[in-house]
Image (cartoon, rainbow, N blue to C red; front, top):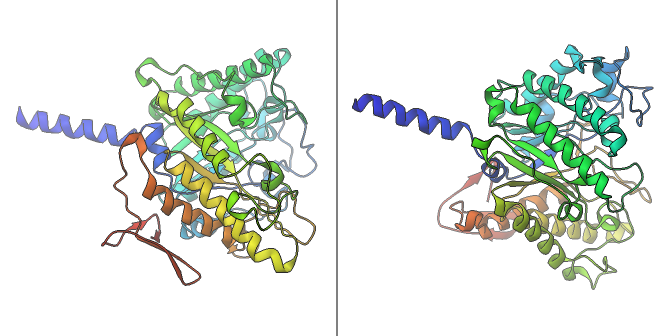
Length: 434
């Protein structure tokens, strides 16, 4: 009897450990990275805005369709070596559909996605896959397409979920990406919100119905256009299985705020700390960023949901060669602020890397960090340094679930200058020391 009780207790412990909540999953992501402009690309000759399904003869060339090299295990190893412990893998499926009636995915493409997912899982990293740039879904949030799209989405996610059903809980699924009316970034209508809410519910229903590990897999749902402000009103949390409550679901937002600093070159400095060096965005600073993240926490974390910043980043830009170092320092400061504010609230963050690098007067959406065509050379070290500083600060200030974190940063050194030193013991966090 004692042995039986002992075995039962052990099995219960294993079960709990094997099925981490969404909040736990996010809290364990110290730094996430996006494999951008890779598996979500169309094959050469495919209209990027097409809403059609198909599987052209060159479909397997989609991975390099936007000029990036084939993904390798060595690439993901370099990302981990730089300190990241999670990878978001955007995936486009619509140009790999062999039977649109059943939304059957080309077995070759499915195998390739599994291979890339495996590169990260083999290294002990967390992984997120989604539907990304599937224009039939992403660009049509209207009642006219609602029923049709939900039918197709059910079939697609049933096929994806069945293919990955036996994968462990390090793998998470995200149902959609930035669903919005094309070229319209204004506030959504009630209809737009309703359609996006229906996509989220369809995704959850389809994945859970496949059973196995998918019954409690971490599922990630999106606000309209992955916007925080649009999610604070009009967004409805999907209903999960009754036994799951809200333990295994996260809300995803993207945060390129303010865009005229993060994605464009209207402003070269951000934050009150740097306002004496040049003009800064008038309606955004440290307090605004903190307020935004607290709103997300109060709205969703308070319900037991996880929160995930699935994309964020700063395009490289500078005024003159002499100002470049200071502007990069400011970019590091933004990274530190965002990551620390997210981490101390238990949010995971995934920085966007599209392998695109700036040249003078060519700054728009230059979010490259690692040069994939040059042995993964770290070209935007100011981004990675800022992330690491943010991790150290965020962990020190972290009060997840209102309980002070037991993780203690030791030190962080940049340019030979000691920035942080805590405690009297050595601590190592996901491949780099603090």
